Image 1 (cartoon, helix red, strand yellow):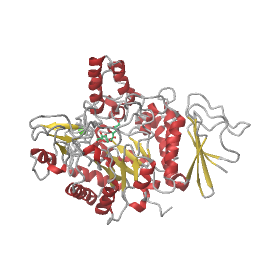
Image 2 (cartoon, rainbow, N blue to C red; image 1 turned 30 degrees about the horizontal axis):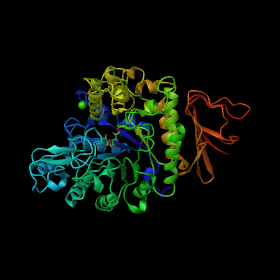
Image 3 (tube, rainbow, N blue to C red; image 1 turned 90 degrees about the horizontal axis):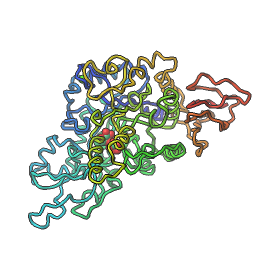
Image 4 (spheres, rainbow, N blue to C red; image 1 turned 45 degrees about the horizontal axis):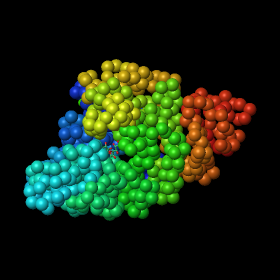
Length: 567
Ligand code: TEU
Ligand code: CA
């Protein structure tokens, strides 16, 4: 498999620096903390570390609002500390992937400060400015140019008093969208990307990169109110191909680009990840993490295994011949996978390891989100004041205000808080749980967000001392991907697609076939397994080796997963 790029047999670990490890006692994770845990990550066996943003930022969106792309925020450290971290990571064979957030900047970025200062500022056209909807009538100040909404509640347009025009922000109003139709913007981004690659970083995770190309309806205006659907425009492919030419084409060495792309389809992804098109290596798609979301992400729906299998199976099939999948079940924006897809109380170890085995045996590059490797769970804070995420806080404020106005029952504070408990992003952002000392060993100070109260039982030290360790299970999965070409490259075939509890599939490469069978339920599986297991070899399981029975294999127990090599 030499002809296949390194990332086809690699595993990436996502660090959310703010919550990973604090080395100076200010309650906020930092580069020094990450450096102190490199041996831990090397021992886990991952190949690369994706760092969520550590650049200077007012931190309205925890660093996804950047005011200087070529420095490190003092709260995380310094460029010198970053260089030291990079050297230390490379010396352990670990690559560092940076978070590229270029759909928008912070409103404190000098580019925006200049752009907003006057209508004829040379950087005016670096962002999206529009007159009020009915500015035609002299002196009248009307509404926003159109009805598009922000992902963080409220309109996507904010009136700026300096020039009496609206600017676009798909996210918080402190995150104005850059105008990628302006070649000066594109040039500035490529220059910055080359600066980081020349410094030695190994690639980028690209934040909402498909939104940099704006659909005409989003930015035309004034016009009647409109909204909904994806902001993505067709010029996205031109931008990504130009970026590849200007930044990666001339380089040697092993790099990785993964584009975060909310709302894209498998058909889109075949274009984005077709190596011949030289756009990105892989993408984060959102189909499987949108199945349980109702009219908003906080209105969660009951989960369905057949629906999940259909979605993940569609992506396996769609990118089987051309392109490449990323594989993830959680990240800093999603609830913890063991709480969302498993049983995080009676069967926390079993369901955490079941989903690890299922995900890591799919075809694609798996991403481990910090804490996933020890089965960390969602948090359940009593009050909205314990939460920190701008998305949740804006949602709560707007929903409760709506309730006060209309008495609309599903916006009652307790109901809204339940939505934050189940789907809020802070579920993934409570401090990494290292041990049972104060604040889970994350900080010697007061953490910026409280640790999950279950940290005394759920932490790295306890997990690694346990007979059944999630961490060791992940180690074995990563070793399998590094050593078995069938895991990295084998063809995927879903079995029993309609079964409500059984997740089963095969991977085939040449004469080798691997079989995964997983019982995603609290009750034992009563139906027979979908393959002839005579002569099969059990490579990995999350229960003690099943007692042999007359029929060849014991039935699958609650949340039991097994990996077989078929004869
Ligand atoms: O997330 C993009 C994105 O689509 C998220 O807003 C996602 O839809 C939402 O969080 C689900 O609840 C990226 C970053 O991962 C996220 O942390 C940032 O807040 C966002 O972009 C803006 O930079
Ligand atoms: Ca710190």
